[in-house]
Image (cartoon, rainbow, N blue to C red; front, side):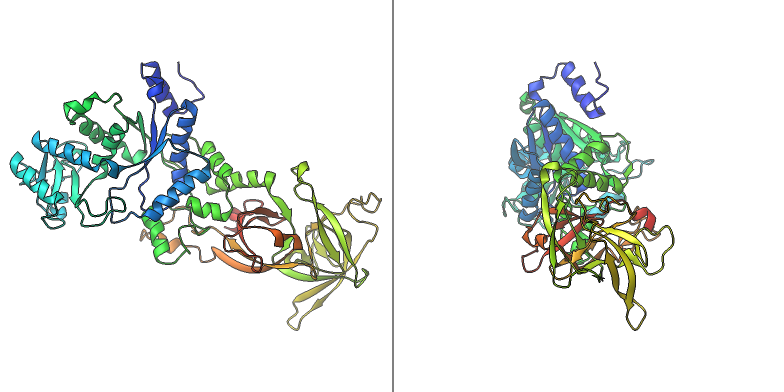
Amino acid sequence: MENKGQNFIEQIISNDVNSGLDRGSLCFRFPPEPNGYLHIGHAKAIGLNFGLGEHYKAPVYLRFDDTNPAAEEQEFVDAIKNDIRWLGYSWKKITYSSDNFDQLYEWALYLISREKAYVDSQTSEAIAAQKGTPTTPGQNSPFRDRSVEENTSLFVQMKEGKVKEGEHVLRAKIDMSNANMLMRDPVIYRMLNKSHHRTSDKWNIYPMYDWAHGQCDYIEQVSHSLCSLEFKPHRDLYEWFLDSLPPNSQALKIRPKQREFARLNLSFTIMSKRKLSKLVENAIVSGWDDPRMPTISGLRRRGYTPKSIRSFVEKVGVAKRENIIDVSLLEFCVREDLNKVAYRKMVVLNPLKLTIINYPENETEVLSTENNPEDSSAGTREVPFSKHLYIEKEDFKENANRKFFRLSIDKEVRLKSAYIIRAVDCIKDSQGNVVEVLCEYDSKSKSGSGSAESLRKVKGTLHWVSSKESTKISVRLYDRLFMKESPGSNLEGDFMQDLNPNSLTVVEAFAEPSISDTKPGESFQFQRKGYFIVDQDSSKDNPIFNKTVGLRDSWLKKS
């Protein structure tokens, strides 16, 4: 029976098992091409395949689809493995499409021998022109009726590099009038005189995705080959290739089944590796792991946690139709996670000097404050308090209306974990800008002291740091990389026109001294400001923090 709590992919698998498929034969795979870093869109496919493996206690293979040596590098292989481990998943084994190059070549020779493939010597432009349109049939290649002997000889010459790159391709012989244009004699091998990151210079021909994909699934005995929705038209070709294999290969137990799900599209984000690569190549970002990038490594450096990304993927779910998910959901997930685990720190990003005129000049007081009010076991930390402090500039207005609940002349606020203060005056520079606020404090209003004054309610609470004991840090304030919900939807179709020129701002800030003991990769909530992570470039002498996300979604308000 159908389980209503299952997504449609799980229902397909359950139906297959109920129809006689041995549950012990279930096997899944995640097959990235190592031509770039994984991004948040891949997290959905990772979560789906590895999640199914966990649910059914079935093996999941990490297969690198390394059929294009012109774009693939070992760096990308290593980054992909690292990202999947970081997300908390483990694979049964690592495989490569290149593991099967010999077998794929032998099967291609078999297709030629059965007159199901031929060598075409036309240009790629001529082949494309003969494809026809969805409403008009294509035209047969003038080389379609070459003999088996000639096709075999030419294909061997291609393999041995005895002909020029681009001079020939191998095409499947199917049907140039098929309604599915992918079935109109697709190219299955092309020549590339490029060194491969694993096979070196052994091969001069490389299989196309459609030829390698299904056959590798078959060789590895993958039961369910799960692809994103754009591969649905490829399913006919997937089945045709499997049907065309030699009879002795049909002895393999499991025939893989390709099924498709909607990929993850995120607002204000691009998911194309080609476009992401352009951002890297043009130095728009510092690299694939730039915290503004939607790559897994970029999100990790930004401060996103594995739990937050897995929670996001779970909330998005598995759908049959494409849709765009609001990036605010991803931001919500990381807030939800970090709120529970991140220690709090007081950091002033835009400092304004504050002097408590009735506080002793040379006295420094040590106050206690909670590390995380959401976690009683997190304990407390000590922060120094003195006559001279820093507060945020935006937390003071000389003359404010009744709706301004922060500091203004003759108005009281509480300093977090400290005292109630009242502004009495301010000092301005020659341009009329406030450079210092003069206040008085209520010495009996210390937080946690239990006195009647300490329990007195005021509407505003401000964070602060002691100017003398504070630590200077560098803070990278990241915003969305694109200003448009759908980058590239302008008339020119150029996503580069939609870049946000203010996606990165670097400021010098002042933090409580305990921040000097932090290490790269540690996340904190800067109170009243948001969540921040210690960057990998940080050092004790030069602490650097990246903004992960604010305490609430402010994008709509800014827009």
